[in-house]
Amino acid sequence: MFALVFLQASIASMLAGACTWLMLRSAARAWPGLVARRTPWLLGVVAIAATLALGLLPGTARLSIVSALELPAVLAPAGQDDAARAGAVSSAIAEEDAAYDEHGATPIEPAPALLWLGYSWLALYGTGLAVATARWLHARRRLDALLSVSQRLDHFDLAAHPGFASLHRKLPEVREIDAPIAPMLVGLACPVLLLPRHLRDFDPVQQRLVVEHELTHFARRDPLWMHVCILLQAIQWFNPMVARLGQRMAWAQELGCDRAVLQGRPATQRRAYAAALVAQMRMQAAPGYGHALAFGGRVVDAVAARIGMIRDGVPATPRAVAGALGWAALPALLAACVLLQPALAWRLEAPAPAPLAAAAPASLPRWQAPMERLRVSAFFGILHAPTGRLHGGMDFAARTGTPIVAPADGIVVSSTSNYLGEDKWGELVAIEHANGLRSLYAHMDKRLVSEGERVRAGQQIGTAGASGKATGPHLHMEVSRNGHNIDPQDLLGNLESNATRTALQRLKTSRAS
Figure 1: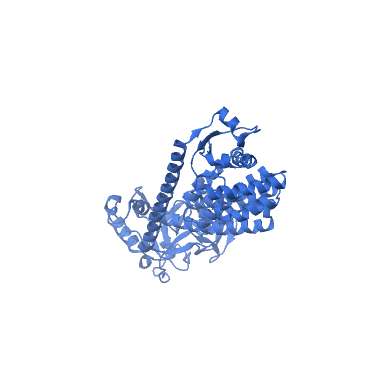
Figure 2: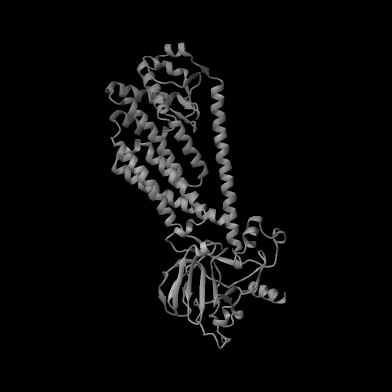
């Protein structure tokens, strides 16, 4: 069922992207200086990626506060091994359908149309990921081609270059090329500063400011964060809000470097810097190299706004405010996306109310049904094929969230998710009744009673679910008398008329053996 889970996680990721974008845009209106802060936009991309990852983890949906998303389902065929079924369905579905839970619950699988939708999306995602990878490789080859024809500047060349005059700071490897490109930082582990030879035609002050801009990127480790953002964008190529946040982060990096370079400089140097930006954009042939930090290369469409901010200055926002917004947004978004992400539940058509046709033995009382409608998906005492053990209770197919009630008066003796020190039972409630009887209800979605609480017949004790080791939503019910398991039908009446065909076939096979 991974395909449907991945589809659900992808939808949750897009919803998280929309929420993140709206939140950060609202924050940027309140604090205009936020547009020049890298942290909030980068953490927004990380939060959305984490939402996608959390949606794929087992058990995440149990934290949700949203009702389960019920989807049409069919009962998996019984009595067929993996090899026989592999020709009909994919191996992933075969493994899921063949894996009964430890109490013999009948597997439930999504309707074929839903499986087709899930696998179609998985195939489309793989295609999109391949295209994104191909684009990255193409951009990498273009940059490698530029580096291969460039000339490395040694210590003497740098000393004679006007852009490095009176510059006392750590330098990366510097190369120069006779091509109409933008000055840029290329690479991740050891970035290379690639300069066009036409930069020497600029005013010496402009050259120093342009070089300072790129070296500020180097000092802030902007290439590293840019590559992280590009990777997360490739993984989430289907989410348009991730691309928008990535653009905002690139914009914030450029503005942040502009602000650092121009801080405390006179208006004449600000104007010279803006003129250098315009001149550079006029000269370069290709306006962008998506995997390099280029002076003017990634913000061509917003050049007018950038020049205005260079001239007037970027509104100040305290670093603490920007950092707090970013780091507070990350856990808040993750928590919201997990809590608001619905679980998948497979819906079977509910049968008519189960009649209590057969009277219980004289020595035992008559109990009411634990759910309004009962449909048996596994009978008591059948042989559990994978383990060779007998089924110690009865399984009833049920939608997630279906109310479960106490069939008789009693005292709750256990209400736990770790019954007998094992988590295979999931959420479980056990009730002690009169006449030495005890009932147990496993794989519940929610428990509504506590240990030691006295309950009345018909009082709700929880809801059906698929917690613990279960292949789908159902109720596993066991009844014991004086410590020995008995057939729940001894108290509920004959339920064979309200059983699935698979359950009846397995019961017939078990009786024949």
